[in-house]
Image (cartoon, rainbow, N blue to C red; front, side):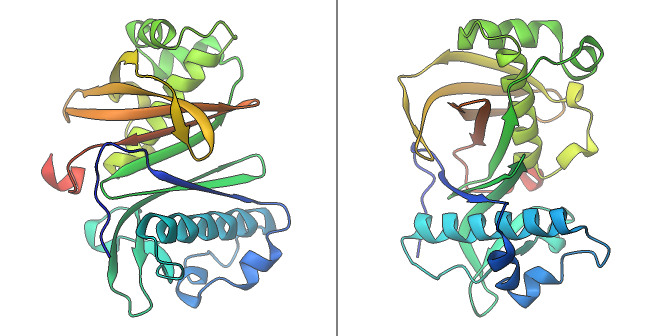
Length: 239
């Protein structure tokens, strides 16, 4: 089984958090062990839905139903990045990212490092905008997206930053303002997880520099943002 990086979009799978009792009951033992004993019911359902989405995305990427037996954490890399494993515990040729918000879980699978974020479009207050963004970042996203809806560009920029730190494997251990992004004009529309999306060239600037591709798709009040690179390597190890 192989999964090339290529120019295509990552494979996306969605799962509802509501009614995730079956997904929770069906969690592989190795995945269940990742849940803290004190996890709330909501957190357990979110976790189960996210893992179910991740396994489904990997199976679709590899075109091999049932290939992904579990999605664990890459403890060897010193990060919490998800790792797709087969029934023997061997690592599958797929990178994974998981996100959830307000009752929906989504996961991306790709043949190269990938980050995914799902965010609700809403007005972000001034204090958060100053803490998270450089002024020129927001202006660049406003120009590239051309969307007049209030908060759209800022939420897209926020989703892109969240996706990038997942791609990096750092999570929010770094301040969002340290993840400085520039964005190019959009390519023609394409599909991302069944959504109409636009692809953008994204540049990560700062201590770690990288040329990335980002897909931004809208579904009602939500934005789905996926970020990938072409190199099938761990970006932390190559930085």
